Length: 292
Image (cartoon, rainbow, N blue to C red; front, side, top):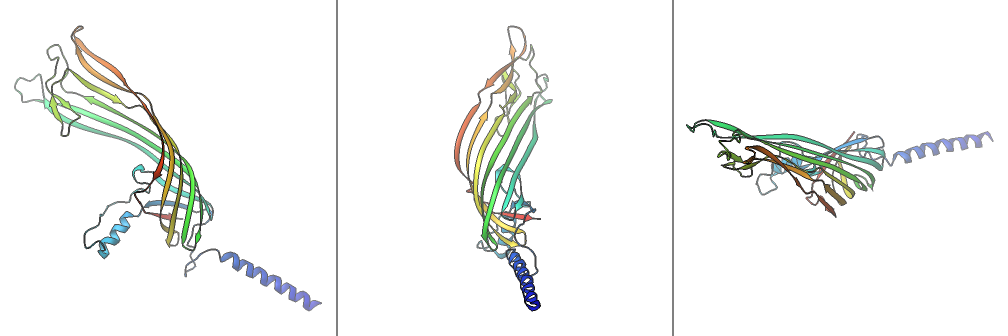
């Protein structure tokens, strides 16, 4: 009886050891014992793989000895949207993903024109154009994964929302006056390069209507883990989205001959609405994902 009990205990211990080994067999590791695939609790960030591909192409000259593009910096995963892209793994096969873009910028340009009050024609004054832009994009998604070894496929969906707005302001060195009702030296900002014209009305500001966009995007893609926790991949998506733009305003100034003064006139510009669905990312961007 004692021998039977000892035998049963040994079988239980061996069974537990075997189960533990089987449980660990699902965790893919390299020869050094490093885990290759992402696991629950891992974070990930992605960048475009173009700089690395171009560097390799330049080294091995696979492009018939012609030079590849050689970008000096990493690009965003999602191309023109310029969003910071990342993931958090809820489990080994499920991740939540998010992209954030907070774009705000100001650009100004100056042009020097003749001073209308100078009879010698040697003095100049400054015209100035200032452009301000805001672009915010927020997206989220739930990603499911499956695969064999280093090759992993994924799919999922999530919402995308965006906000856009812009304002242009113009300053002029030559003012309207009772003696200069049509300034002869005013910059025409619509030409490139800028030209100088005479005008009896000119724009002071243009404010585009606020734009709000919303959509739902489904996606599918593949990744191959070239190194532990480092993957090379790409994805395609299908998006249903709408965009609404509110009314904008344009303010101009002109000389009022009746009241003998400068007056400002504000007019509205119409907004817009669009709704559509289409594939995206057919530019074929390849990205690198780093998990940690």
